[in-house]
Amino acid sequence: MEEKHNNATPQRPEGARALNASVLPIDMLKYIEQIKNEEAYLKNEKNAITVLKTKQVTVTIVALKAGEMVHPGNEEGVGMLILQVIDGYISFESRGERAELRKGYLLSLNDHLSFTARANEESTCLITLFK
Image (cartoon, rainbow, N blue to C red):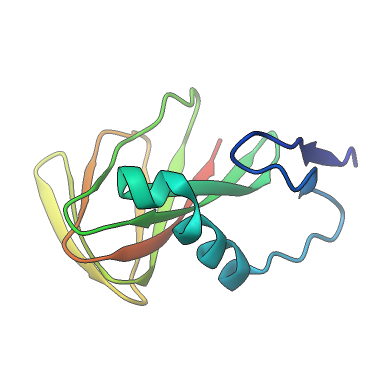
């Protein structure tokens, strides 16, 4: 397996971190605290960090202040999206179907990425994309 790393950026200067390895422990609480303390969250009221990326799967932690939206990305070939609410309350809508998602809820969206997700209160979620 080829290990994949993310390089340092001006936003995250602490250096490279693994995004893919044979065994990859992910400290979710550490990353949630990190993204909520970064300027992007404080200024733009939302922030995210990808914690796992392979050819088949991408896992991203997203922090949103009340009223902020999550929009589908432009990843091609995505067959399934899973959104798990870690904390908070998110309204989700796709193709006329609505779901109210609170802490501990998990939602799957198959075969398309057309959706709207809005944080009704400060919220954190985990988004997993499968190709």
